Image (cartoon, rainbow, N blue to C red):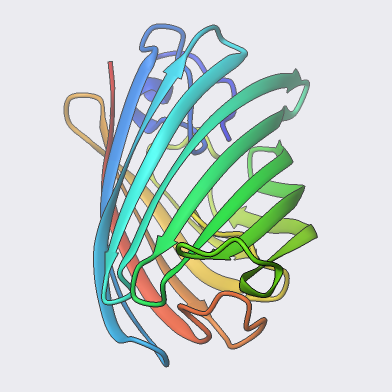
Length: 232
């Protein structure tokens, strides 16, 4: 998700989640996380991602994550397209996710397609996911099931224009970097701030009240993320 921007200020701020400033086509980011939920108590971990801007419209990438406590291991691949508008952008994203919950002995496969409208102060995401759950080493009907229709939705609001080098915002969504759920809603605060040498500091504080039990690893949860993004 990114707003088309130009100039030094934008290159430093990386407007939106993934901005192409016209010069730096490669982007990496990493963050650490920590939290607590009613299933595993405390947990922590890290995640990293890479994006390659093929053009000012198309990008591809991949992500991976490890969460200790949950014993969760994840990766995904993605492709996206940006449609510029007069007052923002619409992004079309496709993801293939794989989550391995080693502690509970099951795997989760997700295919998600979403459209994101991003304006200077507000971003809205709507999409659809196909989710399949499977116990490790089992292929019988009793050991796996699918959720073919899982709505993806989210709203984010910034207190400053997205082109500013620092910002604080609020979000409400039923997905995170590596999962998509019907009614496990995330409520939280997000921020970003500039660092030297084309880097950006970012973070989130997130609370997820109890909801759907399909995500066995986390029914009720609070967590924080803190990371750095760099492009070249």
